[in-house]
Image (tube, rainbow, N blue to C red; front, side):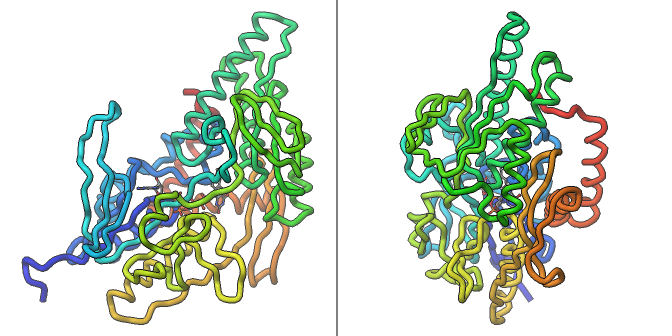
Amino acid sequence: MDGPGQRKTQIVVIGGGAGGLELVRRLGAHYGRKRHDIILVERNRTHVWKPLLHEVATGSLDANLDEVGYRSHCHRWGYRYFSGTFEGIDRAAREVILAPLLDDDGTELIARHRIRYDYLVIAVGSVTNDFGIPGVAKNCMVLDDRDGADRFRNRLLNHCLRVSRAMTARGDADEHVRIAIVGGGATGVELAAELYNAAAALRHYGLEVFDESRLQITLIEAGPRILPALPERLAEAATDELEHLGVQVLSDVKVVEARPHVIVTGSGGDIEADLLVWAAGVKAPEFLGGLGLETSRNCQLVVGPTLQTTQDERIFAIGDCCSFTPAGQDRPVPPRAQAAHQMAATAFANLKRLMDGKPLKPFTYHDHGSLVSLSRFSTVGSLMGNLIGGRMAIEGRLARFVYTSLYRMHLVAIHGWLKGLALILVGHVNRIVRPRLKLH
Ligand SMILES: Cc1cc2nc3c(=O)[nH]c(=O)nc-3n(C[C@H](O)[C@H](O)[C@H](O)COP(=O)(O)OP(=O)(O)OC[C@H]3O[C@@H](n4cnc5c(N)ncnc54)[C@H](O)[C@@H]3O)c2cc1C
């Protein structure tokens, strides 16, 4: 029997994204508050599922409707939420170090402080990788978080207003909003298509003379084709669809510099644009390299098959911020929402086994395939699975259905079945009663 002064087992999870939020829900629901203290440390106050960010950026999705407030979520699921930014670990003392909490005007509200842990799970995700290319960090926008998506949307709308105004004032004006997107992976492709969807809707919201023909989008890919993770046939179908919409798709073009409103390419052709977006790859946040744990070339924390970091069995890492290469393979598990979701399940099982003194189970990544949404125009992707005997290319309605199911599964994973299903229903109602675009 535990005595009244007995110290609770403290499990600290850093980062409440696709992996971390699901994990604290499972831990909180299973252990409750009696003998365990489950703590989520997260720098934001609300969670928006990262794969929705391109829709937030174009205004197709109002993040205020889809965000999850950590305070109410923790109250429901029996964990504690600490608003703060993780910056280091004191492994000898088993404490995580949180940066000072500052007010908007820079006033220090809470000084640098520490939280004790018995077990720690790091799930801080990834950031855009600029590969050290000069000028990218300063001149390009990125879709790493809600702030970045909101910033992009505001600037996009300002340029749409500029063009609309110019065309209203002068009948012969031929103005465009020029957008250069670097990176022909899923994020770049989805953003390009979503922009056409949003532009088509703008004329219903007061920009009468604006439509998709006023967009000039250039998608720049360094490799020989866009969507390298998908079969060639699907990448070709996506290229055709994008070009049909009006996107200029450039492959085999390496970017060497970004200047204000200009993407400089190695082949000498500069691309001028009003908005520059960098979506050419991800890496883990650089501060992870200073934690005293083994990291990969991409700053990811290297973990073994049990998802424990190689130098400290009390510290796990999951999702985009960890690097795990399954035995017999030469590439690590890709940074995807489905990997974060699967790792959350294994981390939960292994924390439980570790505390129960049982052997831990190895993580097995099941690649269910990948899907790329070209907004309402098309969806392409490939499904993997034993049932279909390998890889199956899918397009159209079926692909769209599976794509939207991924977010629904995330809702169920973080809210449980009842609330998850209720929110899916509310999402359908919102699509009918809410405006098609978020314009503020
Ligand atoms: C536009 C876009 C589209 C995508 N589309 C898909 C898709 O279709 N399918 C797919 O599988 N994947 C997709 N991805 C990738 C997917 O979003 C990630 O793989 C997934 O979110 C990783 O989950 P995670 O838990 O590791 O990190 P995240 O979901 O990024 O969560 C990390 C959390 O940690 C918090 N955090 C970070 N640093 C700190 C700190 N120092 N202190 C405290 N908190 C911190 C962040 O605020 C965040 O809440 C997409 C990504 C983007 C950007």
